[in-house]
Image (cartoon, helix red, strand yellow):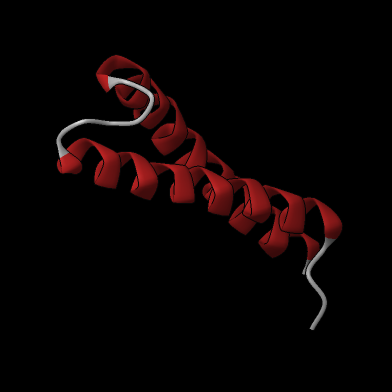
Length: 66
């Protein structure tokens, strides 16, 4: 089975966004984030909705192309 190009790109962005979410959670739980508290919170607040949106969009595109 081959993944359509648009779905694959959206899924790639989703994976990168969720990796950023996990990294931010670990940084915040460690006590002193490398980039600073507020910068890490901003990255977390932006990357979580982006990851959810791109994952849903990738699933819809894959379903539409089948």
